[in-house]
Image 1 (spheres, chains in turn purple, brown):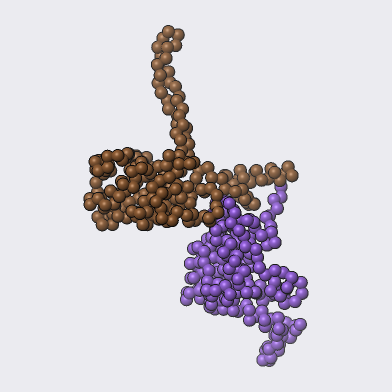
Image 2: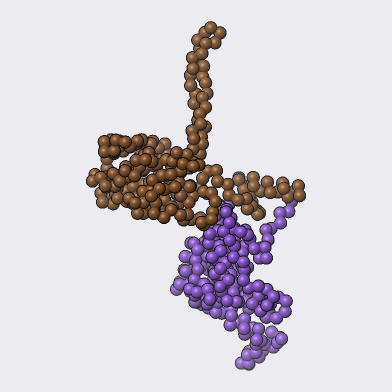
Length: 203
Length: 211
């Protein structure tokens, strides 16, 4: 490991030193390809973020892929209904590792205004490991850009070895997540206990 | 456009077997509607669409209403003989109006630029006789909306080309927009519960304490 001070000093002299880890993460962080995937009005903000005015391309994330096989990032933009949830999980399973999830908007992170309804999932984190959550209804394009930057920071700080290494470098951790089935009134199971546990109520 | 009374009179002249009623509306808009019996609803709708003066060629909206059983209380003055003297006594008479499901159609004319005429049909009850004639053969645009009414209220439209659930998944049990539908209790945690959610939260907290 090279010291940060020495690295800066060398950089001033025109010598660039880095580690494989930094180089690898730097490359990944600056070309996050999201999946073209919108569920509700948040998708409109997502489109705005990718267009000229807000220009997501500045962060290397403008290449929206229409196929999950070519995508690194799933932006869950909008209300996830119980009918849609299995399809979202299946799309996520079809993405190659390393893959990330941004839950965008109140609905995707908690069910939002539909939380007490009969047909809306109370957050996609019940089935998928969410990396960044953006509150807002809908969040502005700047918020999505901030989320992408937060995700980039997360990617840059990932250790490639050791017990904290990301899922795609750990053969023991499964990369696929069980797809819930349609029950008579709700999804079965209502959440994936490996990903999410209901909060304990303290009284 | 003609008034609803005129339309009703012409309908009754053309279709003598049809039972048509004009329903008042107490809300601010005060839009009244035609209530048609299920047996002649298709003929009535066809008349409304094909009649040269009405030409209601566009069905803009189909929706459903669930009317659960309702207890009606009426105060009636009854003459009673009390201690040899005839007196007027107020009596409260209770009666039960059995529940039913209703389908509402909003009809406009694109040709003559008028409307809407609101058409209503009612089922016999909410349990086993929930059949109504489908008006999709007359207005193709009613297809998905009738499927939605079927999905959420459980009205079975006879003559519909493809009556399946549209919003809920196929294996779903029950009709979620009915007043007596109880969603599965999937309460987890609520930081600021209120109203119905508060009641639900209390229920869950109390079981926590007992355990």
